[in-house]
Length: 91
Image (cartoon, rainbow, N blue to C red):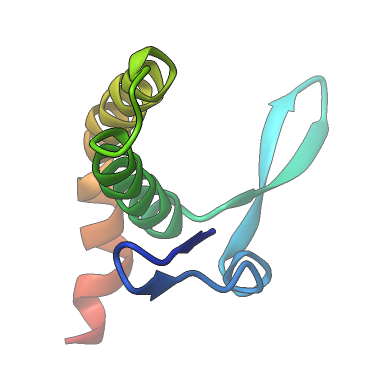
């Protein structure tokens, strides 16, 4: 993801450094980004789309993506206690 309007470039190689296996049932596992990376990417995407929406005339598509980003961020942040549990012991 590259957002020139924000001056932020996200290196997708972060996904390889911050991934884990998650079960999707029936003893099947897939690689997914860790929660803290996923929240970060969703926030960057939401801000970037919000800024981009100010520059386009038809905002419907971007507004639906922004709504989904915000919805996802809200759902993901309900798991912040797990992040604290994983990292607070470091400090």
